[in-house]
Length: 146
Image 1 (cartoon, rainbow, N blue to C red):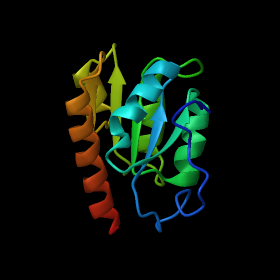
Image 2 (cartoon, rainbow, N blue to C red):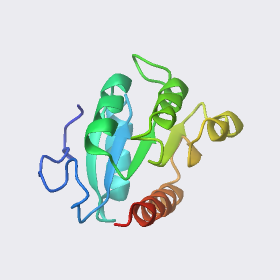
Image 3 (cartoon, rainbow, N blue to C red):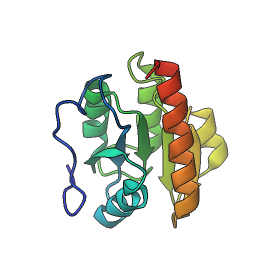
């Protein structure tokens, strides 16, 4: 799990429950600087964060904490990001979680066909990231009745 100036939460009211008052974003990014940039861009928007650099950990976290949104890099050390996306969309517990792919390799057509909510290119457009995450979180929370 990545940690630095933006640490993942350990608050039990945030982890793994529908009682969360703030949306939880799972950031899946193997580059520490990019992961923290994403978190910093979204910090003022009242989100909680959980970060991982490993795809298999992301799958476990997604099933355990049921985040409101997942941001996903396609280049991970242990699994292809598109394969991870397909696995998330195939599982009943995680299929409705919006996934925003953020990658330099973003082929939007393939990504959208795989079930992503959106595909954003690196370098990251901060305003577009904020708007996309907000739209995804709002849609997910409405669908979940939160």
